[in-house]
Image (tube, rainbow, N blue to C red; front, top):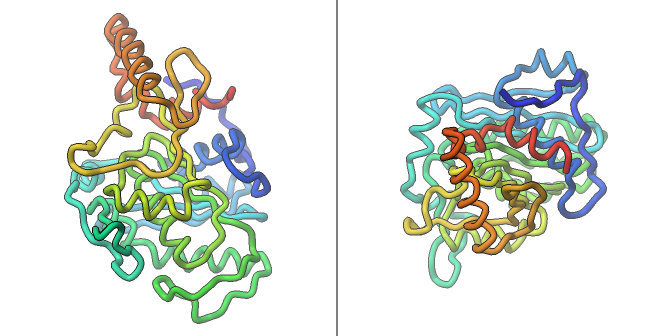
Length: 292
């Protein structure tokens, strides 16, 4: 359905540029696709050192890849009914109160389903990241564990966190945990990501990770519109919007978004296609951004 070229090697991540990078966006999208459907053996066939972590009770999954000069963590998007049950757990929770502080007198709140998924595999992911950094020659204090709050040396390369759909929401939660533990963040790239928390959560996240976080949104993809603002949810990070007609906009105005939506929906009506979900597929994102 989607004409995305296959390759025997993965696109490389470049840890040197600060800010948004289309090569890094394309590389992160490729890792999201790998998290959605591949295995450690298939990664090895491409010469990639990666390890998958799955909590079957929550059906949460992510892959940690040692990139040599950096590390990537890609969270899997929705793949089954259980994932969608987690998606619709829209009641907000008060997670990890030890670092989610009050903002303007209100506690930060986060999507309950995303929190449960990330919490179920965080300890394993942190251990894998530490092992990758040790393999790269870094010297990590043995006392550093998930939740310890101890500082981590800046050696071993930065960490890129990415995810598609539900995995994008989980990537946001996990990136904030990494930041709390003082791991260096190279970038947070999400694709078709739903909203994660309330305004206090967004403000808390943006205090430290706004410049490193990019939400790529494909024209009429419906998932980034949920959960709704009327439920108290707010996006964090910067938006990279892919409008109808090509090109891209950084943090587009409401007029730009609504105009693109109208054009896309009209085209979908004329061609009788389900553009709202078709634009959400990770391969649709890969096809759209491969020439940007």
